[in-house]
Figure 1 (cartoon, rainbow, N blue to C red):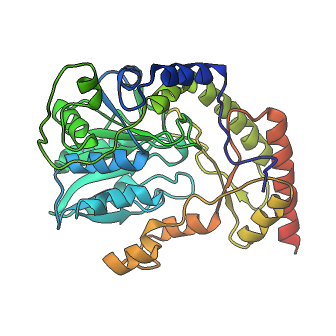
Figure 2 (tube, rainbow, N blue to C red):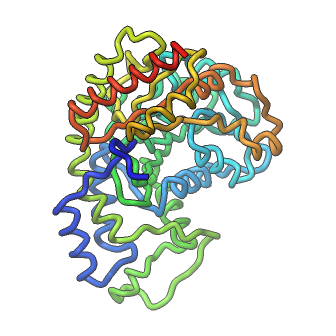
Figure 3 (spheres, helix red, strand yellow):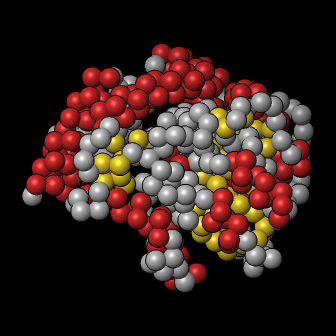
Length: 383
């Protein structure tokens, strides 16, 4: 169906069209100079380091976990309240994902205290996800990592532009992973990026992105080499020049669009203050969010499915972020996870509902949506 108010929308315009057309006319579509420029610009945006553009956020996570030299029997601590790709990236390496609970109703990010409880002699890394673009408590997490000599990987898929104590999310840990999927704050359709300040990690990511080669087809095209060598087993996780052209324009818009998101969130918060049946998380965020999502928590006695169905009749798209990864069939069968292991995560997963939020919305749109949400919730409470 066509939504009157979709959960997300894309801010594409003439600048994106112009840059994509340049790529098409150049007749070079695979990873090349446009990608290199995007990588350099993104690295500079994050404060300096090494950025490698890849085919997806999932590819970024996979390459990041490969850098850690994980093996069977190793463990990585992560949240369950995330998209499954976060956990899958660990399983791909043969290591075990160890899920830690979130902070609570006020903060849907992974809890530093719960992380510390999960550390064993097999723990090799912590993989955090900045839920909805709201920064995790990175000071506490980095302190734990240093204490136990663990790597930290940031899943910053929701958090391009978010900051924690003056540092960009995705540039605080050892490796940062970004997604540029169509619903993200920075959109290239499909696409992702790995950021690090570790030169060895950066070189490994670049090789693994392209079959284990240090060179690219672009180098051959320019006559820089006539042959190539495979230095290790790699993958085809390359991005395209079209995606990078979109990314370069989107990066210039990111700050402005995140500010638009913030203004809309402030309107939502004002509309939902002291509304019976609604709880608002992240009222006191740690740092400056990127406002990727606007999550609400419904009271336990409210039928979430009924709320979502009724909002659908008004053309308002909603979603749930997220079904807990540890309760997916695969993870229960493979690792023995069960209901009750992460009580806070499981409670949030039952109660959370995500409302539309994107930079093409207006304040008027937000107020209209909020009125419909309040009306639907009130009706459900009376039923």
